[in-house]
Length: 221
Ligand code: SAH
Image (cartoon, rainbow, N blue to C red):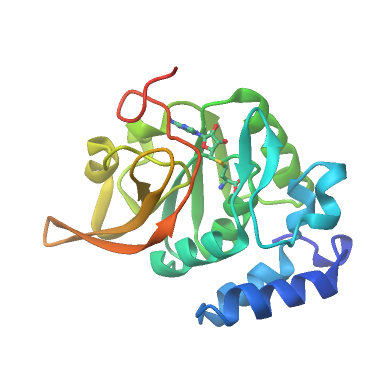
């Protein structure tokens, strides 16, 4: 686990983020709220964005991508119902911020990012904070990561036209996946649960993510 003492900037901003963006909007999981307070989101954004790191919006992280809004990260992680034994697949590492939150609350996180520059930066940040239960790789996450499947939880951080079949196939029995589904302008965040070998899909909220680009997602334009 990371040394909290080295990463204690912007604590009032973090406290306010947890109160106004998370608690007041209905995030209830106390362990998650504590982790969202403790993990330094400012470590995952460029110098010029650090002061804004706890704002209620996505922030550019380069290559046309963004670090997800804090509330969306919290909602995603809360509904995954992670335990200290969970094996997690994350699709769309981006900054690595959500990877850190997932790593704090599960046994192990495998995370895929299609852009190698972002993967390298995320890896640096996660190493600085000493996360050991994370493996990152460059690849098309719409195909999942079959070597380590099945996963107790899958968190997809980019919008897909539909639920990619390989991801559904790699979800363990009683496993839970959160994925934004819909056209590039606006999507529904969906919770997919595998129960008795059947998939149940629930709508969570409207959202707006960058597109998932891959063989079971949107094509490269
Ligand atoms: N949770 C991340 C979100 C980053 S944005 C964060 O908060 O920082 C979504 C990321 O998904 C982008 O970095 C984008 O490059 C990546 N992505 C898009 N399609 C992908 C695919 N098929 N496989 C893996 N990553 C993908």
